[in-house]
Image 1 (cartoon, rainbow, N blue to C red):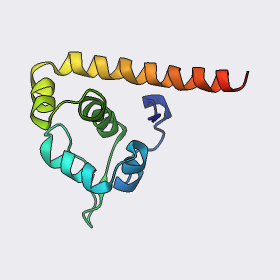
Image 2 (cartoon, helix red, strand yellow):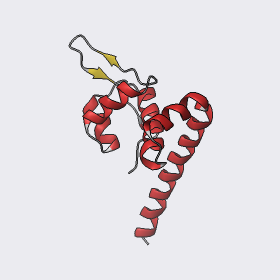
Image 3 (cartoon, rainbow, N blue to C red):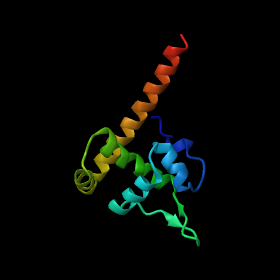
Image 4 (cartoon, one colour):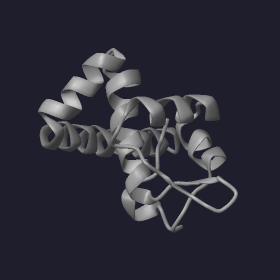
Length: 112
């Protein structure tokens, strides 16, 4: 899966459907993570519709990385974010860039 880089997030707000599509998960999982992780707090409009900022999506990337790619439990991921937030953010950002590079290299290889 190739998630957008920060530079590629051009909109000010994203709907829950757009975020779920980015991460190839159900909207219910996005809502669940929102309840479980205090770092996630999207804005809501007058009708209660969630509006996620690029900063929210960056946090989703970190949570996704911990849970889905690194295999942390919910409690383990929460602890990791609480105790080593800066290091965790850096590692997740590096993993995202490496994933992007890998995808690009695969595309180049396929075109040879």
